[in-house]
Length: 160
Image (cartoon, rainbow, N blue to C red; front, side, top):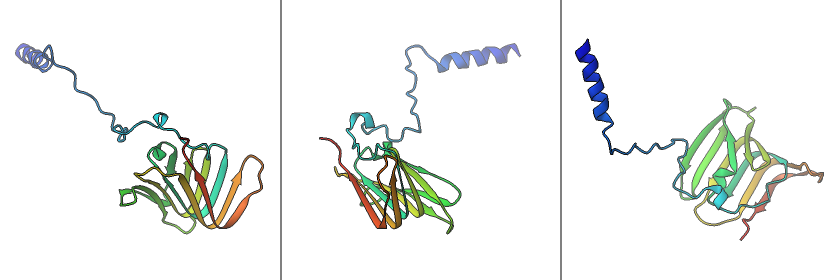
């Protein structure tokens, strides 16, 4: 047993030879580590006020950095997918049930869709565009009257 302990200590010591630098640990949750952080990129103020948007389908398209402002909430009534397309990086929730409630956030806006909720990060500089289709309802918490319609659209540009 003494020989085994001695060999184990020698093996451990040889693994950590002096002068070796520790391996860089990469956080797997930071898959976007190669791109600039959101705090380095200016962002639109258009979605800072508390509001909610409800529709059958909601699509949010925006430039680099939108992933730091947009969140899809996964649940059992929706199928989540992420893929790259010619449009850009697409994150999507699609309903698996006719009674689905798909939720997401864009800054302080709450987004609720019954069929699909999609965020698209495009490679070019573009204003953020939110398009709600099918029984759309927008309600801002600042006291403005609600907006309703078959389709609603909102824009927010980055400050220059």
